Length: 262
Ligand SMILES: NC(=O)c1ccc[n+]([C@@H]2O[C@H](COP(=O)([O-])OP(=O)(O)OC[C@H]3O[C@@H](n4cnc5c(N)ncnc54)[C@H](OP(=O)(O)O)[C@@H]3O)[C@@H](O)[C@H]2O)c1
Image 1 (cartoon, rainbow, N blue to C red):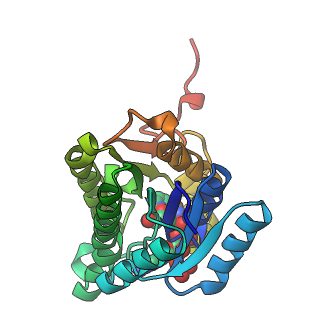
Image 2 (cartoon, rainbow, N blue to C red):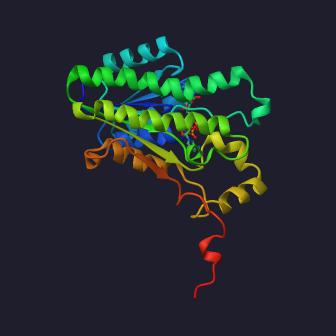
Image 3 (cartoon, protein in one colour):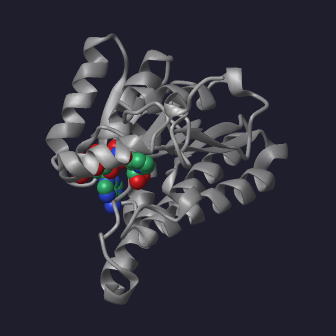
């Protein structure tokens, strides 16, 4: 089967990636839903897309494994056709650790998934896009953590996302003239499995929401909307951008609604 609009969503089985997969399908893409180990979750996303009249397949692959990434792109090309859109949502959280307690192995895995995984998927996607000459669009899922060095204990995660931002800007310049657009979204804290543990601590959550101008965290759909927009022709002149999807950034000092109006 071939389709002219084919999107691969890494980490498409859950959270932001799953919402982006559903959104891309609603926008007319045939969607490949990547997962690492939760085949059941990927299947559920595929079934939801098919039930809504869309086309989707599930495709296994660890983005940190170069051979796995190549196999994943080959499987998508064989079953749907060459990718014209890529969303790099696969990612892992930090290790909630002070720098004094950093472990090489956990740092290496974090960067292998969040940074090298994103780069390898971009490499395979741009090879396919340039080979077929029809251009394409890529969205890398970064994080607001990159802009502030992360919350306490998250400097490793923040650094991995800052690398994604810098890579996005550089890569976008490299391929802009060839019709490939590359952007990033920087979500603030979002309601997904990744934040389950944090969300189970009401005190910590109150501290966090107090730092968000909108005073709440995002839903996965609220992050997926801008991702799907960046993939679309409506964003035809947008490349090299890092779009904050953060409910207004971070409150610095007193929240505005507490300031007496004069
Ligand atoms: N949630 C937030 O507050 C937040 C805020 C800012 C940025 N982000 C970023 O947004 C992205 C998505 O996060 P999320 O909250 O949606 O996470 P999530 O709910 O934990 O889902 C993570 C997804 O990534 C996949 N994945 C993890 N490691 C992988 C690997 N090595 N290879 C392939 N797939 C892998 C998982 O697959 P399986 O289902 O098979 O495990 C799952 O589909 C991440 O890059 C994250 O850093 C999240």
